[in-house]
Image (cartoon, rainbow, N blue to C red; front, side, top):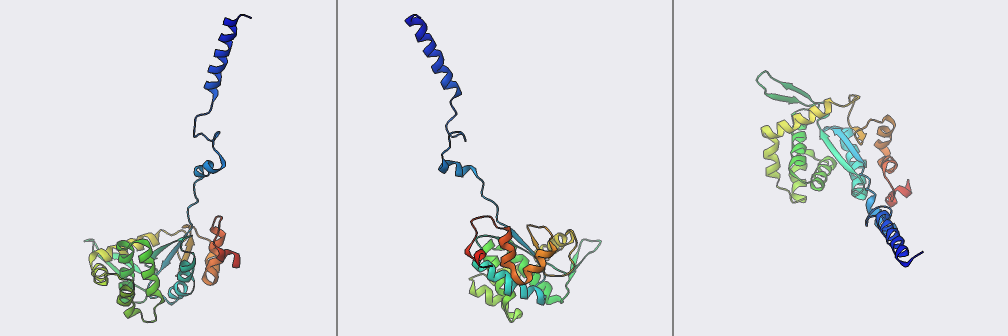
Length: 227
C-alpha cells in the first residue's frame, strides 16, 4: 500500500468518526448530573375545595385539616378554593344576577369576600386570609381582624365584595360548581386534582395528610413518614 493511499484511508475514517459523533448536550453524552435537567419535575397535587363560608362542616374541615396541613406541607400541594357550595343562582331576562345562599345573606357576603380575596391577592396571602376567616370563632369580625393581622387592605376587599364584580366572581364559582361530575351532594366537597374519589374524600375529612401523601411524588415531606 502506498503512503498516498494510506493517507487517503486515514482521512476517510476521520471524517466518518466526525459524522457519527453525538452533538454536545444530547442525552447520549449527558452525565448523571446533566441528565437531571431533562427530567420534568412533577406538578404538585391540588386539593379542590367546593365549600360555603358559613357551613359548619366546611369551617371544621378548614380549621382542623386543610389549614394546619397547609401550614406544615404548603410547599408540596396547592389549594383551589371555590366558595359557592349549595347556593342558587338566578339570571333574569335582563341579565341581572341574584344568588341566594344556604345560610342566608351573611354567607353570600362571606362567599363574595373570599372570591374577591382569591381574585385580588396572591395565592399564599389569599390562602392565609381564607384560613384565618374559616378558623375564626366570630365570623362577623373575622374579615377585618384577619385582614389587619395579615396587613391586607380590607376596605378594598369589602368594596369588591359589595360590588357587581364580587357578585360576578361569586356567580362564576357557581358555574364551576355546576359542572362537577358527579354533581356535589354536600359540602365540603373535596377533590384531588379535580377528580372525584369517594374514599379519598371521606378519609380526608379526618386525615388529610395521609391522603395527600398518596398523591405526592418522592421526595416526600417528613410528615408522610408519620402516617
